Length: 120
Length: 306
Image 1 (tube, rainbow over the protein chains, first blue to last red):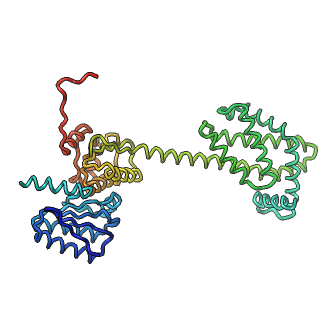
Image 2 (image 1 turned 180 degrees about the vertical axis):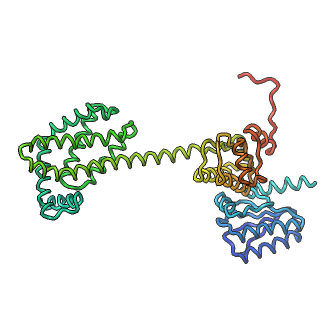
Image 3 (image 1 turned 30 degrees about the vertical axis):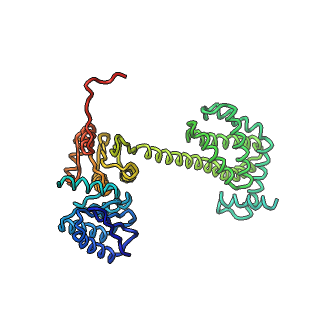
């Protein structure tokens, strides 16, 4: 299942609808990395609220997305990690180091807007 | 009548598994005799028992009338258990009784004591009745004692089980109470931890904190461990995991009140504290949290009088 990517001002929003296969994740990664420059976006929000399982591949992909987007000149925030998922992730050692996280979409937008203001 | 014989035989099979059928036949006959004796002398034996209970100062938490009332029911269930050889009714009654008397501070030794007293009282009445016929007395006691022991056992086990259930329930309640997640300001939570942290409690703390972060939409959390005396490697790792999991939810964690001993332990076991934001005391932690949230707290020039 493909992940829809929405454009909202300076920000791209990718919302996970359900559990995704590895191929879907790879597809999302290349789509985001391409579109971030095409739309001249300054930030990317990946919303994982709907995910109730986060395996090592998914968390590695999220980390790669953040690093690649950074290299393309934009910021990434992961939002909506569920409490149970967060705890399971740290127990597996998947801590998404250096990747900004926020509670939900609203917080993520807030975070990016503050970040953009600082750059001005 | 046929049914009753059947169940009496079952009793014996339980009380003395080696007994052959002829012997159990005799025993059930004796038990029947015993039961009718206990029924005939119900009033007198019951009163004697209650007197003995108050003499030995058992069940002081209950009034005389209550003791008498309970004693009557116990006596009847006792005789019934002897007669039918089924203990379910007695067991249910023992559990029900325990439920009522445990909150009033009745101790295990009292419950076991009164059942053993009843056993004594009844045995004595048997001695008195059959004192002329020693052989018969012996056979009667052979039938009576295994059943009576089993009854005492059932009541004691019922009481202890009920007590343990109460203890488990209270432990659960203490656990719930001991992990409050408090909101002090908009988007600022405090988690004061007091007492010993075992892995189970640590897990529960984390779960409650993460849920609290979500429901209160917290941005900063201050975990205060002033009240924690010691911490081992497992719990320390758990604390680090809690901090990381909170970050995944978008909240900053400040840990305050690390005692010198805990600081020493953490350094000795080599926990990576690089990701942990620590402040000396709770006040400092809250002040830093306020700064992170953009609050500025100022003293009024004149403290307001109210």
